[in-house]
Length: 335
Ligand code: NAD
Ligand code: TYD
Image 1 (cartoon, rainbow, N blue to C red):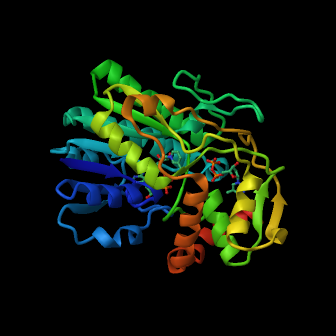
Image 2: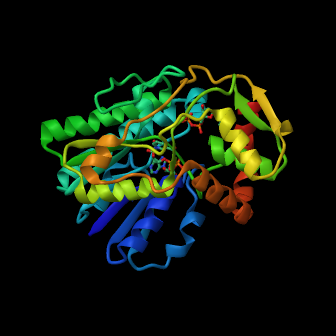
């Protein structure tokens, strides 16, 4: 089988490529990535000489390129996106371009070249926010109600994928997953930022009252879910993928990290809240479990421990990032 993976130099995409080539060594993968600030080929050093792996530097909005790469491809797994909410608040433009126009460009190419499956990676953030302390969860029939430019652009892309399925019979699947964490996550996202800041003895910025809730999914469990959806998922279906069954607030996540890293709480700094900050995410993935027999293998505590160890053992990887262009963004965001 031949896969076109978009955004494969990013956090989840690179974990997916490493996972897939280990799991299915006879398959081949073309990785199309623009190498924005979030793309890092160092994540893929272990496979760069694998004859079944090819990297193409380019933009998913480039229809000519995307069209030529899609010929002879069986499956597209579409990760490429601008993915950070805070950046979308600073400047929505690349989010509209990549997440909406880029997805449209890929859909056109998929249709033209008759790919057997278009799998679109999306987010639970398209459903908006839930009340704190409620038992509510996002379900497959939850209405779309995105609040940030990021989630609105992802919602648009989901609608486009479904429209291509309904109108042109494009064989698609979609997964809406919760917040991922694990190795190779760019240290601007919450858990990777907290761990690397603790390792550098820098303050930990926590937004607002710190009582916001996210559902946390270990990236390896997410890769397994995509694998199962590609092999057993029904064309035209959407699958919800999450990691937790019990709410955990951001401040509790920080306490767990500090506890595991044997540091006290003095590093914690409450900072100005994010505008339009979604209060709570919780996702019900029971249908994915009953239909596809998938569920996350890692508990939050085990996955967090593994993740902390990875950042401890791979300081060169994130230190190179933190001393680069990231610094300008960091200054703008936190002052
Ligand atoms: P990431 O920001 O780490 O990586 C995105 C990758 O896409 C980068 O390698 C970047 O260079 C590439 N890219 C950006 N614009 C491109 C373009 N125009 N053409 C080609 N490549 C381009 O993102 P991630 O965290 O790995 O997320 C991957 C996907 O999963 C995204 O679609 C995101 O919306 C979705 N998702 C992520 C999370 C999460 O917690 N990280 C949760 C839910 C859904
Ligand atoms: P983030 O990793 O940006 O993911 P998302 O906004 O897509 O859920 O943030 C996760 C949670 O952590 C969210 O409630 C915002 C909060 N957060 C902080 O408190 N401080 C920070 O510096 C960041 C980046 C996030």
